[in-house]
Image 1 (cartoon, one colour):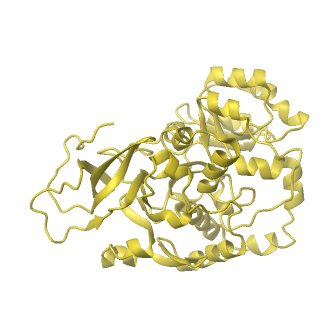
Image 2 (cartoon, one colour):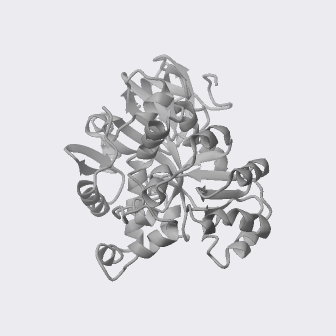
Image 3 (cartoon, one colour):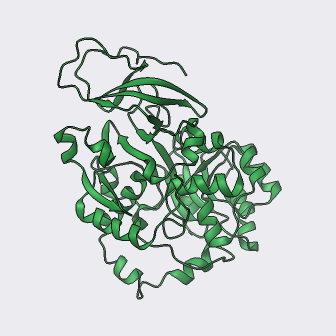
Length: 412
């Protein structure tokens, strides 16, 4: 990928931001020292070194990012945002998700009794914060539509435009698939178990619909070798949620499959089953299964963007693309290795659509008053952050963080 200016882009200013002097990730193993010009939600240009255009007005916001690395904003291929402030539930392993759901779903008892009294809109906000706080700028929500999900006030872009069903247990799943426009994916939980019923789902899927690249199967733990060959030949997409699989089932996808299957992206599932957020999924995949860092990098950037058919070059840093960025302290590692060892404390800022949505205390000081006024404080394990979200929801999310820190150790 070359440094460039977007075709036809104007280079006169003022720009919204000039991000100067950072290492910029162009590919999993490749960076270049560059300056990003951001205007109207887009990366207007990527300029070598600390190059700045002549004649900049004093009003332009130049953010000095020496000793920082800029990564593409992460793409979470699977989440249930309405569970964003919930704790992890259940004590597995279980034969399948069915037994887990039966054990945890007691709305007349705590903690669900109080959590379900919280308005769904507030819970969806919690899920958006949960993702933004992990460097996610686009998340695929797997549940019923809600007006909030299209709001530009959210700190993330919520992808909820594809067809979906909860699982093959949904009696109407085939009719919902048939009603989904041909240019959309169809997302469904699939073979989430190690029992015989889960292994029979592949035959049922093939019997009831045509296998093709429109299908997005989440989990797929209970799939035989022969059925994997059929899914691969048909171009079917898989979303892998490792810590959720391990918590519920005690098993997840095999390393060899993950290395060889070309259409797998990473998802965080939700806090009711996962270890934490998308960063925790990356660390688990790297630590527990020794998945190569460049492959993991793609599962949350370019591959995930391809799966969700995202536009505006999301998942990459390209002139003319969306200004969705994850800005971290630079540890000198290649982008993919840095991402797979990233902890929350390494994040300096997250930018979604050209606006800063998460900022550390240090980064906040470089923003003007208008940008600062859109951010509200979030205290987390002795550190203070600033997030574009309602203070009352941030307080609820802070309670969750203090009650249930990530089960995976932060890496310094």
